[in-house]
Image 1 (cartoon, rainbow, N blue to C red):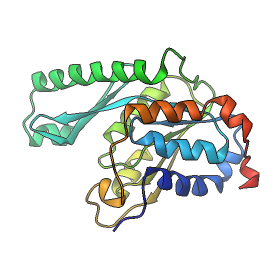
Image 2 (image 1 turned 180 degrees about the vertical axis):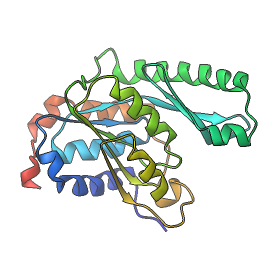
Image 3 (image 1 turned 60 degrees about the vertical axis):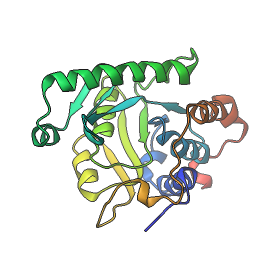
Amino acid sequence: MTFFKNRRHAGQLLAQRLAALQILKDQAGVSILGLPRGGVPVAYEVAKKLGMPLDIFTVRKLGAPGHEECAMGAIASGNIRVLNQDVIDSLKITEADIAAVVAREARELARREAAYRAGKPKLNAHNRFVILVDDGLATGATMRAAIRALRQEGPSGIMVAVPVAPASTCMELRAEADVVICLHTPESFYGVAISYDDFTQTSDDEVRELLQLASPKSIESQPLSLAEL
């Protein structure tokens, strides 16, 4: 069963849910951080609807050798590494295997940071309430790495907001984030992609375009307060 036409549609529905939350109305400064690449179209719609600044927070999944679709962990900016020990043990993955995957994904993480920002400084999360957005969660390893890395920047609070995820993953993340919002938690979860009619991979060009469209100048030109939603 699909819940969303595409990522932009998912973001619009997620924004409607967030607009009703009192905790956001009580915050003096709120920023939206999309996880590239798929989380950015979702985050863009949230930022546009709520009139909040948008930036990216780069995290890379660590695919298990020979089973790349399976996350054995994730890395994020700030030398943060989160490992899924159950996956590592069940697949008998060695430390050397982990090191090789980490090195490869660290290079890609650095490339994306440079490509998306084009020299622009990242958003300062210190003393701001930050909403981390992705297009969905499976094991939650990538989001867990993002939360732990972001904590180092001293935000006033962290919310995780996603269109779809297993109920168990959302529950586990509540031990890491201050607030977790999951629009849909299917009883039988078979993956994020199955919840979308169109789950075409988001390109680097689309990420750059959306970040440009969501520049402070663009947002200021069409402000929309939470009270108006």
